[in-house]
Structure formats: C-alpha cells, structure tokens
Length: 267
Image 1: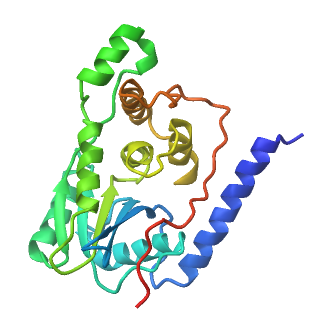
Image 2: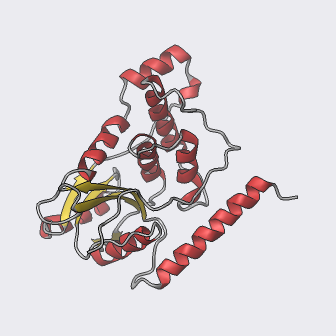
C-alpha cells in the first residue's frame, strides 16, 4: 500500500512539474526549473519592488548568459504569480569557490556591462561537523560564538540588506546561486527561509524544500545540511526556541509557495 505521505509527496511533485512545463512553454528559453522567487521588498516608499531569487549557474558555453538568466528569472517569478518589470538590475550573488572559470566569466560580464548589475563573490563550503555529534554545552558555544566557515548569520544579513536597498534607477534582483542550484544554494536559501522571511519557516520545512522541491532527486549535501543545522541551533539559542533543529526523515512538507505579500503595483 502507498502511504498518505508518499502520495502527497508524489502529487506535489507532479503538480509542480506541470506548472513548470506550463511556464516553460510560454518562455522563449527553456525554463531550467531551479530559478525560484524567495522574497520581495518594497523600497522608495513602496513605489519599487526588489526581488530575491535562488538559481543555478548562469554561465553557459563559457560566458554569462544574460538572456537565459532573465528568461529563467521571469519563469521562476511566474510560478508565484509575479510578473517582473521590463528592466531591472541584477546582483549576481555567487556562492562558488572552486569553479574559477565560471567565477571569472560572471565577473567579466558585469565588468563589461555595469548597467546590467554587479557581481558579488561569497564562497560557501558547508560544515564537516554535524551539531548533534557534540555535547549540548559545546554545541551551544559553537552555535552562538563561532560563525563557522560560511558565516550564515552575516550571509542572511547581507542578503536582507541588498534586498531592501534601492538602486538609483531600477528595481533590483538579487540572485543567489552555486553550480547546481541545490547544495550551497539550498543551504543559504533555507537559512533565509528561517530568519529572513516574515513569517519565517520552520527548520523542517526549510530543509524539506531544499531537499525535495528544487532539483528534487536528491537531498542537499551532508556538508550543506550540517551548516544549515548549525544556523538553526544559533537561532534556537538566540531565542527562537520553537525551532526543532534535528532533521526528521519522516517530515513531509509542502513544495507550494504562495504569492509573496509584497507585489509590484499595477501601472
């Protein structure tokens, strides 16, 4: 017999796949499926909306593919019933560390086209140590006093500041990405889901979305999962005691994300 949780997971995946195919059919470029709108923010007294996205590597055939990236951003926004403006300024928030050729291609594009946006290098590696492998006293000290290799507290702060900062002329899109748009991107995005969104998601839902809802054939890497757990424990010890920071393999979350609270005003 098929359990109700397995049925719900299969049904959610099928519904999301059909929606992705529908959006892709209307796009000039094939939708990759990994570009997702995370959050929005109103700036300039509510007259302009900025956007935070997650995605995968925008370099194709050795160059930053601007048109492909924009097409995927628009398709990802449409999944949440959002229509992006005709023009915007992209902040390429790159989580790559070892992929030097891709990093160089992204950096070069924005140096040559500063009117399109700018490049931010923010390497993410994960953590080799699971929080539950150490005692409570050590775990509390490390979670609250040690920022870790990735420094996720500062990462979420920087992303929040970028999202809420107005550009001189255009709406801003902050695009978080690594290579596959899964592990490092999942780690950073899930950290933002917990503490950047209002209201924030639970740890279990944040991890579930990272594992099952984007490139859902596999879970995020062990290193990325460890780092996300450390960030959860930090939030827990800082007062968010409703968070349950131990992964639950039986948890079944939801891949559907409703339209954001802040939407562009219709002209």
